[in-house]
Image (cartoon, rainbow, N blue to C red; front, side, top):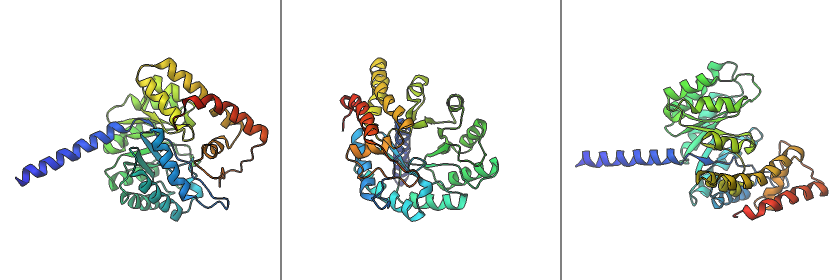
Amino acid sequence: MLGTVAAFALSQAQIQARDEHEAMRGLFPIMATPYTKSKQVDYEDLAREVDFLNRCGVPGMAWPQLFGESSKLSPEERRKGMEVIAKAGKEGKAAIVLGVDGPNTKSALAYLEFAEALNPSAVIALPPTEAKTLDDVMGYYRALARATKRPIFVQNADIGNGVTPSVEALIQLAQEYPHCGYFKEEIQPAIQRMIRLSSSRPPVRRVFAGDGGKNFMYVLRLGLDGVMAGNAYADAFVQVWDLWEAGQQKKAQEIYSKIALLLTCEGYLPGTRQYIMMKRGIFKTMLSRRDEFSLSREATKEIDFHFEALKPHLLV
């Protein structure tokens, strides 16, 4: 009897793991970090962002990472932010992906240990900034993989240390640790690298794009697994994904063309996304610790003009 119960429990765990894996597709926004007027982390708005993204229908969300200004947050702020997000996320369906990267293996393992206690759906990690060789980078990811059984997203981005893991090294990592076969690829040429990763299934399990969502339609056409972008327009991005999956490609393209106008604004009007988050009532300010945003009246009129075109496709 005990053997039957144990076998049933194992079977249920395997089903849950399979279901979580299957859910790792679609739009997984990298959450922004909101600040008060004194540039302290606004944890109330951070929880509101979780609720907003759940209402937008995203299948998952990640924090903090580069867009969340992880390098500008203290360890205490990151840990408290993880707790706030994990608590707020319990009421929603979206997968919570917590960022556990650090400048070196020791610090990343400490973040991972903290995140483990919060029971996220997955974790994500940028490469270590203190790495000097490829062996340093891959040793860091292997240490994380040994310390958890949760899916690990490797965010392969240029962090300025000159060390770029090859696609072959990433595939080898996934072969050694199947739960480390999840990739957010942002090293150029990113599209070619994503295609090569995607062609190595298994052991590669998921291939996500970043780049602020500017390559989203290409990602869909290539049959990749998702994109980590678009927190301010998450409900519109979700519709594009769902329409494409339903075979309504022209409609998906039409809605994305409206998003693209705002993505273009982000290039020549820095602070566009932060302004939209404030405009939509999610954040109280558009402040950042990394950049100083100053939008003129004419600039906000430009953003509002393009936002009006997207409004009919917003759900929240």
